[in-house]
Image 1: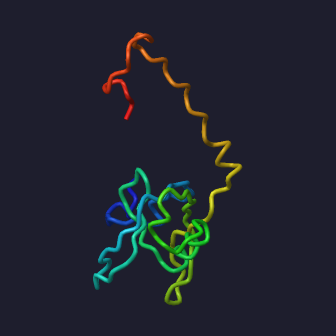
Image 2 (image 1 turned 90 degrees about the horizontal axis):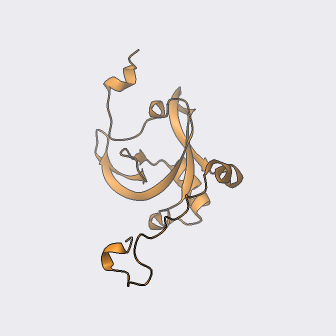
Image 3 (image 1 turned 45 degrees about the vertical axis):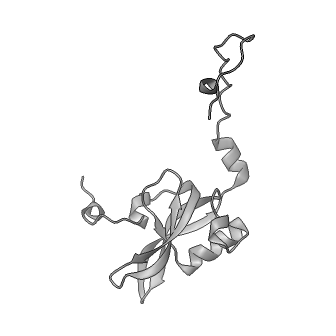
Length: 136
């Protein structure tokens, strides 16, 4: 069944994009972009592996400062956070919004599978390693 929110695509993530679920994401970067009808410059938070950015408001910015331990946006890269949909009051109405909270470290460790063992090199152990065999 079609969702009416799909009829109004956006470059920025909306509460409806989360489909009622919370998600653990890692901050990639913050960019300052013209947003909205008035093209006001706003901070936009981008996540690793995600296309859409999250336009930051004061509430979410303060929470990230608390979680990352810095008000410098360049220090936020690599910080894992939970984004979740909820509601707030705006202009006398209840509206959907996205909020941010810290990741529960114990839960995160249970969710993260251990990395697979490194494969054995396929070269002669007596021969020197070539640049093509270095993994980076």
